[in-house]
Length: 100
Image 1: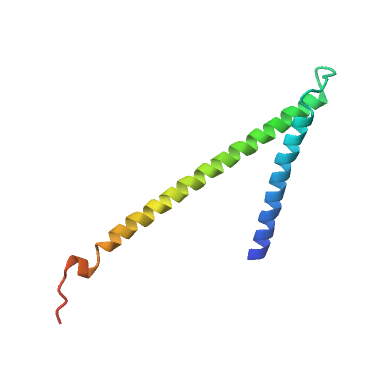
Image 2: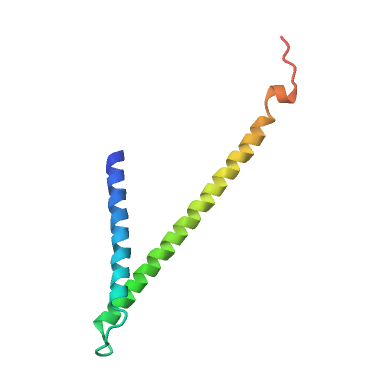
């Protein structure tokens, strides 16, 4: 796939993700004080589904954020270690004589 197509797909997924969060939140806010009609109230079932989707998306986002932060910390540690390691392994720092 081309780079522009990957970028377009990423934007579409981001927009859908944001719309699901906003629509679920709006439905929960507008229907919190409804009158239940019976045991199988459709509004209550929809509220439970919206709550479940928000919880799932929030958990997914938190997991992705945690993984990203761990990877960033690991990359920073590797860069720091490689910087200090490479600084002391040159011929001049080891004071090796180069004779012809």
